[in-house]
Length: 440
Ligand SMILES: [Zn+2]
Image (cartoon, rainbow, N blue to C red; front, side, top):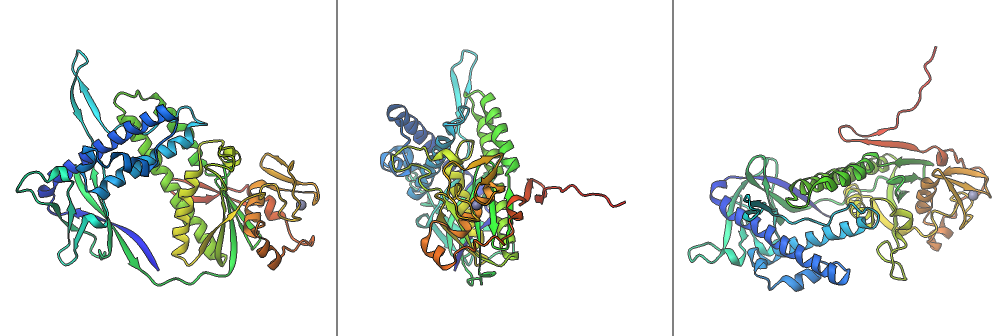
């Protein structure tokens, strides 16, 4: 089994490579701006956002494209397309959402004439064709963009000598990212390596079900008749705080807005990673070898080509792309523990009772509770969804093999009273405090 690891490396010959790295970082910003302008124009003219393949086709002959190795330029365009995609998802329900900004700072004189412009040093990514790795000597050659090779004596590549933590072996290098650390005023390398590891044994044969949603970011049902809820409290707080702060920024400099966007996205990424880690840990404890996760059928577009299906999940600030992102992280963390993640259809999972299988289009969901008139039971609606996903009710085969025991013996208390984990930036996921009676 292969896994990817990213190692941070210090640059030993920094004074020699700083200048060419700066040039490439600036080139990445310029290409970003050209592609951003182009995307906005297409958006204005057609109401559609070009995707990364449109951008590549359209801009590959643009002079700014040659500021970087072709694979590095492609990465800039992919990143921009991702940003537009995430903005596009948000804008429908959040008028304060801003499209990705330009990476430039302008300076004006007192008459308002621009006297100077500055580009930030964007991260530059090299993929395999742009990398020559000298493992023996801890050096990597990074191909220059054609625009930076003009000087007759200029080298074709930037030769970087790096140093990682002593316990790290850098091999099977897949990607190199040069990242500028503003605080230190230095570049550093992030080295993405492919490692071959033994395929781990699954912790057991049980299946868990994960339902992603808005009122609770995740609900997880286990075959042990236990369920956990992750309300995603700080994710929601951020969803209110950041757009408000970003809206306060004026669009001229865009520096503060860019920083806020960046911070917001970092916090989101951190949340996704901790959540995935926590769920996988719980799965290990409960002998889970397979996680069923609800697939957002037609989240981007339903059969009619419109986006009505945002409905159930997407009426706030998180959208298909966020769920995709989280699912990828979960898949990765689970795989490393030998747990398979399977996307299953979540059709009808919210309107079917997971105990008696009764389907009701008009089922009542009140304050997050699912009310079944047949069982006369009331339980948490998201846990109901997660349990239906765990049972994979849309897969006839799995239904006939393991027909849920519909006898009335099954305890349902766990469906009404799931464990609730709140997330805290410093201590991670903590069970919600219970009211404890003090003994006399
Ligand atoms: Zn029922």
